[in-house]
Image 1 (cartoon, rainbow, N blue to C red):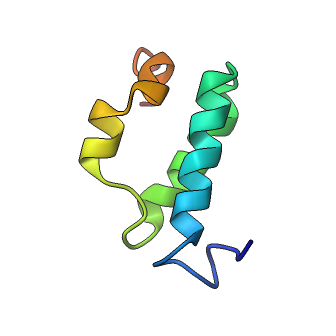
Image 2 (spheres, rainbow, N blue to C red):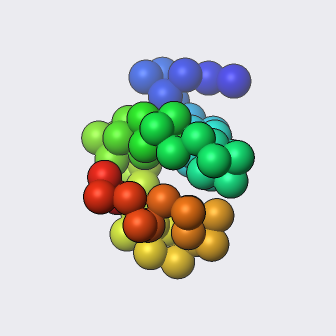
Length: 66
């Protein structure tokens, strides 16, 4: 795996997004929000449609941090 700091355009954001989804699905919202916070600051890291439509993030939508 390449860290996001070295690969902020290709694979790095995808790895973090998948990790955030795993945390959301395993009832670890704080860890999921940590990953999403990194993605929001990363160029081409996160898109509005992903947050709005991805069913893996349903458990996070009721949280005020979302």
